[in-house]
Image (tube, rainbow, N blue to C red; front, top):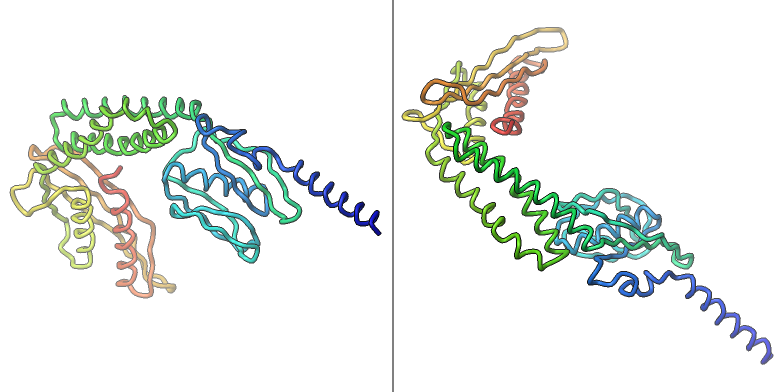
Length: 329
């Protein structure tokens, strides 16, 4: 009996020893394999290699303090996942699958270890890691390219004689500035000491919005339509709304710019219903009568049970397109 117990004890010890030996070093002691001064790393778990990899990527995004969206699916899973800057742990009764991760940060040079499969828990583990120096070099090149473009746009806006063009040029510079700020944030998250070298550039970027706001104060618009039909009033309202959204103001008189809206269309009647085809042209003229911006679009046939319904749907299509594209093209 004693021999049997001794054999059982040795067998159990042997099994645990073999199991422990199979666990990779990066999982047992990740800091040893990926020292913090050289790497950023995070582990992820899942019921497949792909889900474990996505989980690791979601967790590593915490270092960049960005929002990660995770699309849930009904798949039995075990692991950790990250959403809205919090880490949630789930047990084996939870059902989810990390399907897609979208982040405001670009993760350059993210690498992954080989996956480790734990038979006991039926889970995969993977470690995601970023070499700080290598990633910082990539960010630095992207940032420098953006900063050069921003400087060129600011210089162009300064020498532009047409205020509307100057304001739109600064808008482009402001958009690039937001991207550059994000890259700078990522690089300085990896190597905090690099923040010092970007202080002048961050100040330059912060001044763009103020410069554009000051310029836009002098730009006022009047809106005129080629029709007074009440059904088209939502188009007028939408154009005015887009102007305000972009920081411009409009008035009925004494404006520096005129916005001319021309709407045309055809009506068609079939047994299936009533149909209309609408097109819109928007022209912005400066006080000298020169065009500074055009927006034109012809829309497909839109139908309804009645002609009124067809017009409502067609005009709604124009509204949606104006909200998305007017002054942004």
